[in-house]
Image (cartoon, rainbow, N blue to C red; front, side, top):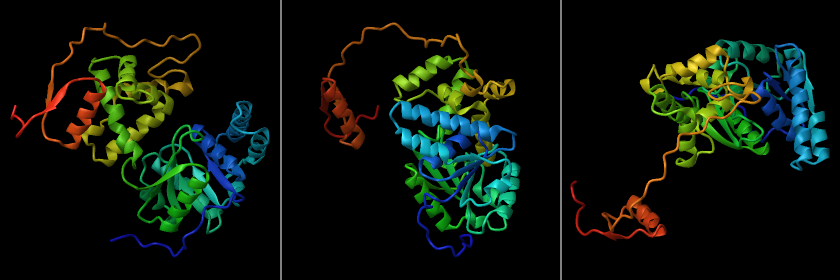
Length: 353
C-alpha cells in the first residue's frame, strides 16, 4: 500500500527568480550553488564552519571567471551569476528560500537534525532537497512534521559538469514535489531521472561492483592500481579507471557510501567495504582534494605506469563457425566481418561442447 500523499498540485519548475539555499559548501555544495546561480537563481550559501561559505563563494566566482576566459560563458553571464551568490552566517539567512539543498556529511542523524531546523525556518511551500548519495530519503524525511516536501536531489561530482541528477522519492515524498524538482533540474540544464529510495539509488548501486572488484584484485595482488585503471580505460572503454575515479570522488565519501549500501543490504558480501580504502580514509588520504589517495597528486610526484606485456604474434584464426542466428551471434558476425575474419554459419543444432 502506498504512503499517503499531500494535496500539492503538480507544479512547473521553480521560477528563475526563486531563491535557492545550499547548506554545506564543500565541493558538492559549491558545485550545486554554481549550477543554480548560472540558471538565474539568487543563491545563498551556509556552512557551519566559520568563513567556509564566503570562501566557497570566492571559489565559485573564480571558476566562473575561468569559464569566461575560456569562452564557455560570456563575461556578462559570468558577472551576473557571480552577483547572484551570497554567503550567510546562519541558517536564518535561508528563510526566504523556495528550495534548500543539503550537501553536508553523509550521516543520517546530522541530516535529520538539519532538516528539522529548516522546516521550522522555511515557508510551508518551500521544498527540501537532500544530496545524499545513499542514505534513505524515507529515513531522513521521517524526522519531519511534513516529510512530503523532502526528496533526494542527488548531483554527481563535479556538479557543474556532470549532467545526471537523481530525483529520489521516499515513501512520504509528495509526487508533485518530485515532479517540480525533476523539472527544475531539467531547467538547470541537467538530465534528471526519477529514482526510488532504495540502497544506493541507481548509480551508486550499479557502481559498487566497479569499485569492489578492482579493490579485491588489488588486495589479492593480482595487479596494481595503474594497470587496473589502464585495463578499464583501454579495454573497457571507461573514461576513468576505478582507482582514478575513487580518488576524484574522495575516499571519505566513497567509503561512506559503500558502508551505507553494505549495511542497507544486510551486509551482503558483494558490497563488503575494502580494508585498503578504510586505511586511506584513516590516514586522511582522501584523494585529489587532499593531495594523496591511490595516487600522489602533490607537486613533483610521478604517476606510476601500468604494467604492459610485450606484443606477441597473433595467429590469424581460420574460418570460424557460428551457430544459431541469435542477436549475440549476429553482433559477433558483424565484428568478424569488420575485421576481415572469415566465418560461416553452421547447420543444425550447435555442438554440445
